[in-house]
Length: 360
Image 1: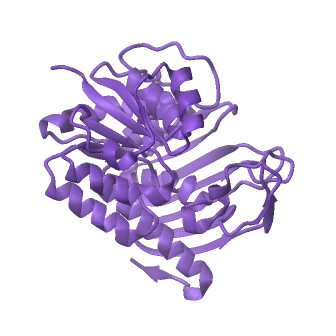
Image 2: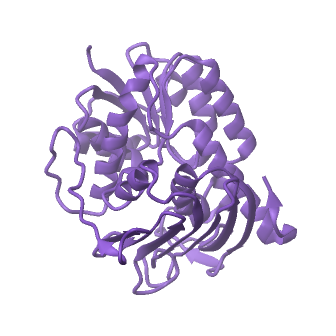
């Protein structure tokens, strides 16, 4: 079949990750890009060698020559853009978090289910070289009955010594913060492997009360930089997830999971040596596992940089999404997966505000 023509909305993560990832999968063709800021759009499009641009997203999603709309705009636009694209008969890939609220996410799930279009949410970190082997072990039944999983991350992104990020990242009303931005990937991975969450307890906090933006403006920080999250799963398993981005000289993650049939301990992160240790009940102890990494079919040779891991992971996700365009099941993350994460995020914030354990 001819390649599916993709229109990407967003000159941030969309340009950095979505465009190069789609270009690694021959079944897709990046045809056009859309963003609000005309000057930045022109500069980004030139760097990406994309001549077809638009600053009008409402007209963009209606274009008859586009098959797939890739939504990588700020979170507040995910809901209206996705619904408009589905109404226009487009297949839709939407960045996480899926929406600002669970109510919006529910509307997106319903619209996707009512359409005959392929839809997916961008939890591409399931496909990183560090996380994919763990997911594969879970799919193979390695853990047996899950008992407990612990995952922790740290970084210096919001430490005063780190350069500031875009303004919306510091505003919870615009979808900012690291509960939605980073822990959402961890919530998705663990629930995908071990089952539905039924209760949430959390401490979600802001350590840095204000930030000076690159343009010199000072703004109050309402989004979170540090979260500790407890989950009870339908399977009976317990989960502890935590992250903080105010740790100077810190970067990386650690994962531990215990089940009736085996244990997995892993660590890694951008610029951090990765390690995967596994041990079944029949083994004498843990041993290091070093599986050959899965790479995209096009065998890309990308330079080592911050976005390379996400680009390769998204390309693998897009490869695995392809059967959906023929109406077949795929392991690609669904809008329902995005809704599940959104419900956990909202419950965590309610819990931290004083609700204690929140039942989902």
